[in-house]
Image 1 (cartoon, rainbow, N blue to C red):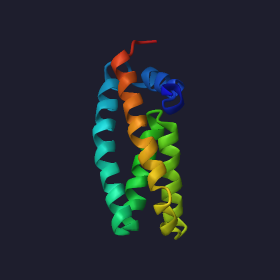
Image 2 (tube, rainbow, N blue to C red):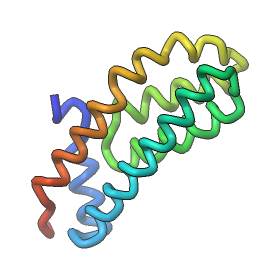
Image 3 (cartoon, one colour):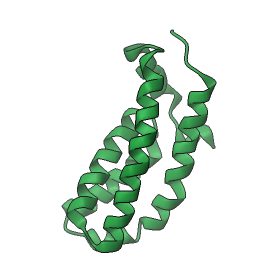
Image 4 (cartoon, rainbow, N blue to C red):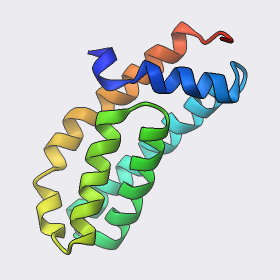
Length: 120
């Protein structure tokens, strides 16, 4: 399941680009920020605040994709796209899917972080 939620190829490219000192800090920041963003997304869904939902989904999608949480990033981008197409109500139908994938995705990248990264 870990390999389905975290792209090792993306992480290796980030490691090559950033180095083994920076990547763990980026992942730590991503994990902290993602939990905050997810809370905002769920609240925006519950309150029908589609402007916040669009913004938070866009940001989560970008960071998730950049750090290899591909399925989470794709789902966040799908939610953002629905908001941009004025189909915001359809985003509510994706809440359970987001609940199902978000925490396992963050856990998978956290587990990958604990394995450590070495220079290529």
